[in-house]
Structures are given as structure tokens and as C-alpha cells.
Image (tube, rainbow, N blue to C red; front, side):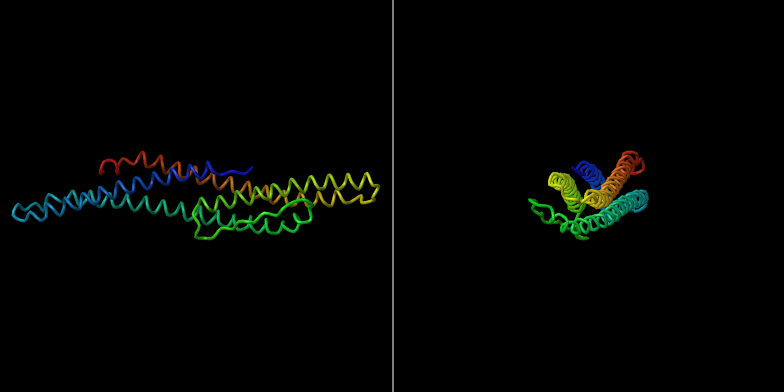
Length: 213
């Protein structure tokens, strides 16, 4: 059974970590702005010069905020786009197999799920998993039917010598496509999990952000 839940969990945890750091930096940025305003408003004490380093600190924190926001945007834009494309192709493959499935006795065709470009990561991955598992079920039933049908013809002495090979050819084609999409999805999920893990490590070692926060 295909299941990418652990990958999604890891990605979501790392994204939450990015969001948490952004929120902390935004909070610090707002605090600095208030301090600058407070000092500048003390006109008679002439404390404007004392705000120079605060302005610098504020600009550094804004830079870190923008950096993390851009990194998060790049990550989500790319992974959602690439997985949506995979999801769409897998859904089309599943739809093309429905007629084959209808030819196999005693099998109920399930509803195919589809993703949209506006879906979040969890929904897209859920659609991919559902349809890949549906294809896997079709392959298993197809193989069982091939074996039982050929046994029935053999016992009844019906001369359909090429039937088994013809059905195996169809099965192998579907199985190749199925394996391709399982592999592509697994590799892309693993890649983006690794990338997000590196972002998480980078956040832990962002000494500039820590110094100014």
C-alpha cells in the first residue's frame, strides 16, 4: 500500500518551524519599531542618535524575515506544482483503466479522486496515494482474473494459446506506468523532505538572527 503520510508530516513540521521563526522575528521587529518611536518622540532628550543601531538591527531582522518567507514560498510553490502535475497524470491513468476494470467480473469500480491547483500539499498527496492504491488493486485483480480465466479455458479445452501472454502484456504495461509514478512521487517527496530538513538545520544555525533577536 502506498503511503506518503510520514513525508507530509515531516514537511509540515519543518514548515511550521519556518513559520514559528518568522513570527518570532516579526514580533521582535514590531518591538524594535516601538522602541525607535518611543526614543524619537522624546524630543527634548534628543535621543535620535541612539536609534541608529536600532534601525540597523531592524533592517537585519527584516532581511531575515524576507529570506525565510522567500524560502518557504519557493519550497511550497515547487513541491505543490510538481506533485499536482504527478497527481493529474496518475488520475488520468486511473481513469483510462476503469474500462479494463469493468471487464473483470465481480469488481466494483470506485470513484476516482482529482486534485486542483488550489489544493494544499496534504490534499494533493492524499489524491496521489488514493489513486495509486486503486491502480494497485486493479493490477492485483487483473492478475487473478488472468490466472483463473486461463485455468478455466485450459480445463475446458478451449484453444486460446495466446490469451495469457496478451493479458500479461497489458498487465506489464500498466505495472510499468504504476511503478514509474510510485518511484517519481517517492523520490520527489524524499527530496523535498531533505530540503526542508536542511532549512530546519539552517534556522538552528542562523547566528545573525539569534544575535539580533
